[in-house]
Image 1 (cartoon, protein in one colour):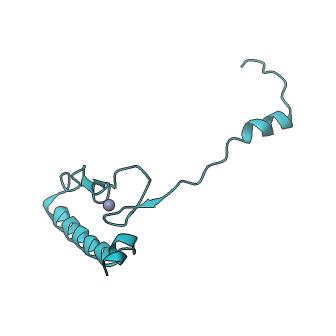
Image 2 (spheres, helix red, strand yellow; image 1 turned 90 degrees about the horizontal axis):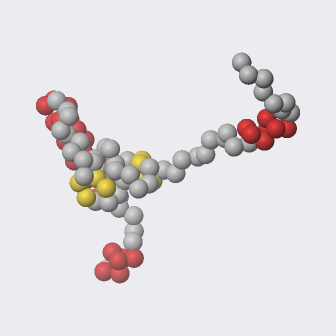
Length: 93
Ligand SMILES: [Zn+2]
C-alpha cells in the first residue's frame, strides 16, 4: 500500500458530496402507455415515436408470442380509449 496524502473529514465530505443518486425521469410510451425512459425505445411494444423499430415477438416461443400479442392488443385498445385531450381533437367538435 502506498502512503496516501493526509485528508480531513472535510475533504472526504467534499468528495462524497457528488455521490448522491439522481432521480431518473420516467415518461410514458405513446403507444402502450408503459413507463419508459425518455428518448428510448419502448421495450414493451418495440416502438419509438409511433414507429416500430424492435420486433419484440421474435425471441419468444410460440406460446409466449400468442400471450404477448394478446397483451399488446389489450394495451392498444386501452390506450386508444383513454387518450388525453388535445387541442386538435377538441377543435373538431
Ligand atoms: Zn410501448
